[in-house]
Image (cartoon, rainbow, N blue to C red; front, side):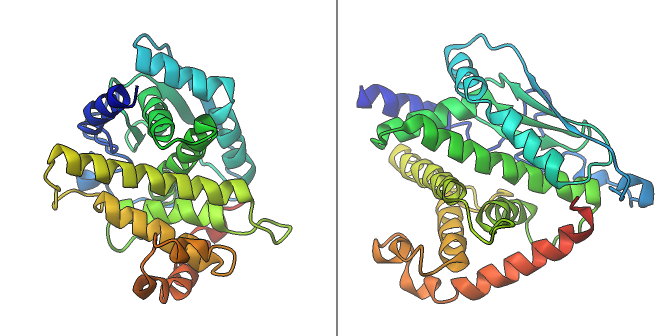
Length: 287
């Protein structure tokens, strides 16, 4: 069983990692085919106080075994519905934004700047589930859903950059990872951080750790020119932000050897800067 799963994972990882969409192959996990030709945006292009858009969920058909399984996981647990509801309660959207579950024939998720839509590929959910089954999780479905939640907020980061014309320094993919962490690790109105949200970021990091390990086993060469940081770098970044957001509660990330102590020392400050940046960027766009 484990050998079969490893084979499936290895094949999936050849195309995993937000490489291209079901329809727009140049749209990476938020990386835009339009980015090189985007024009300066005026006031009408960004969300305003009276913005009335909503995120609207659609589950497309699935035919392959992987897509069918991923669709079932997402649809049975109302994953996309809950994520859309969170966006609709939180952000001012300048227009309706489709959130599609779709068969993409590869594990992927992406924001399409030209179509103004988010796509979560069923195969991505299926691959996440397989990763956590292989890892021996008692409840791999919950782990997979958590990882897909974080994946969605990564794409929401790209969505926010496009819709609100946000200034981003550095790689947008890193900024999108930051937003996912910011949304999930920031305390709510009650001053507390939801434990399931923290676990979602941990599971998100675990998927990148699995990608890195399996790519190494396959002898895959790291693409140093890719718009995404290397998988293991994304693991350390996410772990750093988890730890930095609450060092006392998340000390096990360091004590277990997951996050090197040298990096951990700077993580509280790194988190404060990240949190300040995103709270500032999104301040006028919250409901």
